[in-house]
Length: 259
Length: 283
Image (tube, rainbow over all chains, first blue to last red; front, side, top):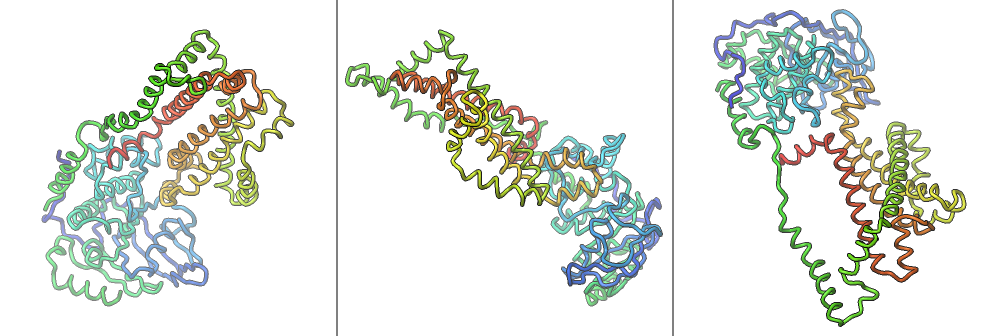
């Protein structure tokens, strides 16, 4: 039983630059002096930064550096203590309908089959859209399965389809590939790059893995002690990154030092 | 390695793990343990039958199986049994519905509202500590000797396990899954129906089954405190007229009814719990 993932060119990717995010549905994200404290502990201590629409940004940093807090603020799951978060110029508070989150665990509902999980938001025509997204992540024939029969990688692909079904302007990824084996992770990287190009959302990937960050992102933010300690543009075309150029190694070293 | 190849590989291992059009397997029960478990009681019954038939014992106080079966047959044949079954089942049914509904509602309230929990839970836990049969004289005084006091006693028995079970189930719902519902902006109703209810359903069924079991226990007490109908009445009648065969027959009817009610409850919830069967079948 083969699940044909749509052609994912391994080699002949077009030259990628910071501006090659596709369809242009992405939203711009801006932080003005954003702080977040839990009690006396300041987790984020003044973030000022702008992420242009459609950019793929990776956020790296040590545990407890505020990465997940940042993500929850963007999604609107928590509110900032101070400062404002703007999406396309408008200050936002509360849960964001155009922001979707991919968690470390797939968080599928075990009592719903795959198709109903993808179409969790329902709405008119949800079945067709969910089926289309499942096809896009290469799981068209698993729509009627229970989530428990899927492998870890397949579960994350279902979660990705679920996140994309409402065409979000911003996709947040909170270490969604951390628990996957190396080969599956590489597949997921290719899949993510492809859907990012096709859908054109602004992608924000949180990761411990500096190699993953420089392989996927246009730009890497190093979050340390609640501030952006470094902001590194990955100015290498994506198809040249796998080869491990000296420039890539240099950037990776710079980020590792900043972390 | 290409994506196609790994995807195929992943699916290959899955296909062997869960073959067939349906992802779960029907596991036929192994009857041997059951037969082994039945051996001792069957042997004892047969042994006692032989002892009595051989005239080694009168079997007056401990009737042999044949005499119990004859008593049961006589009750069923004469039609005398069915009003008793109906009366008992109606009492348990009414008490179960009332106590179960009250248990579910207060369990939900206690888990949703910390104020309700702090206000009401200590009192309920205190009441729970009272052996339920101690209520009997009070209920008789308050509610009379007819149906109301019996149903109330059964409802009290059903209430507590359901209340505790529902409260624990809601408090134990995985916060991470609820968060998914929030992110996808499910309305309060959709969140309750699609996420909270399925999440607590397995625990709710366990709580209801426990409650139902207690309901059957309490109906005996209720019918003991004075009834002109019911399986419990058959027990009292058998004791007063010295008919141990009728007592044992009534006990058998109780066991059968309890088992059937439990099976009915399980069957009612089975469609909603299919995902769980599938999950367990896959392990």
